[in-house]
Image 1: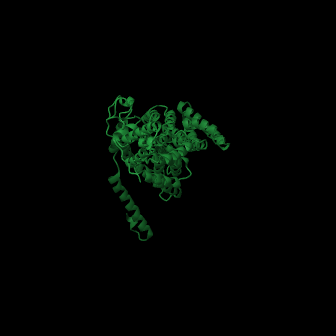
Image 2: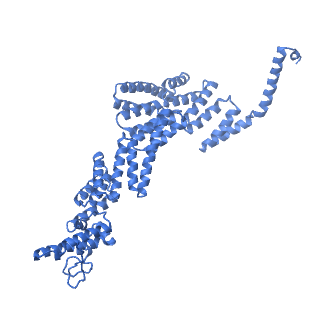
Length: 501
């Protein structure tokens, strides 16, 4: 202490040294963990690890490491917990620290070598296996893993050579074994994904790229690629999810942000169109799908989907010929789409072309290999019934109206035809009989189509005036007439009065 009483620079330095010693003693008393506490954390960590309570075990090992940063076994045990949690990247620094504290700790070297091999780092893995074999030449696991490291290095070279030669199929074949040895290597998966893309198999590319988002830190490129692939396949919701993950890593990433704006706009339009269909606002849905085709004109899936749904909406609107044209275009673009065939069949029914409707339903069922679609089965049965009925009498054709005609249109058509074919307008007996037959058909058509219940039956493929369908159901007509309605039956009170201009 006497020496520190000197003045000048030497005195100041001496005082600082004493202060540091005092502080070190005090801080050690405040923050330093006792041996008993460290042993307690290690014991609790061991028990919790054995019980599978990994997060709780890790917490105790953290405390043990903080209490004694010189204990190589503590680092090794914490690395074991990280590995059990699937966090190999976090385990590596602990294994490296354990090796630094105890260079001859073979278990840590072997474990680190195994991790490095799975990550595809062949050179570093080889060094660890060779270090183990230097001290323990007969170590079987180290020998096997060293052979795997040498094999992996050769396979990596073969894969890269095949890729650069453009032989993507061969590259994929080699990479199968590469990834088997090094499943945590993102480069191998990315290379195989690129090969799948070049061979036109984006689904398998997605399977390879998905784990690379976890194997690499800040893997924005993988998220963007995944978003692009899903977008091309028509899965705009999944595409949006992946590009959002990219922007979480860097909100200023220009590529991701540009793609995000495109996907978000299209996804919003498609979702809005479907909501409009659910609300029966079919014309607005058509407009929205047309806007979607302008937003994304280059990806076939979205154009095909839009045309399919426009076809559906036109059927719902009762615009038969427009629906047939739209559905035919959609069918040409996507010939195996059962929905398009179903909707075109319904358009043909609206247009009273029942044979074509049956043909479309039959073709649609060919693409339902499991036979699980009840809409196709029921639609076919209904179309076949309508075809059968139409070969007898088609009330829509008799009145010359479409299947979507309202009651006012039906009555207007009826009055015009009834006036034209009234038997009193004809002179000869033959003409009167022909006119009477026509007139009866016209009156029957009016009766069926202006009665909601009867019209519903007819639209379902059943003739409510046909005794075969109704099993002799009653009506106002006589027993000799094949239909229950006969305006000319004796004793009837059916009269017509027309105003002639």
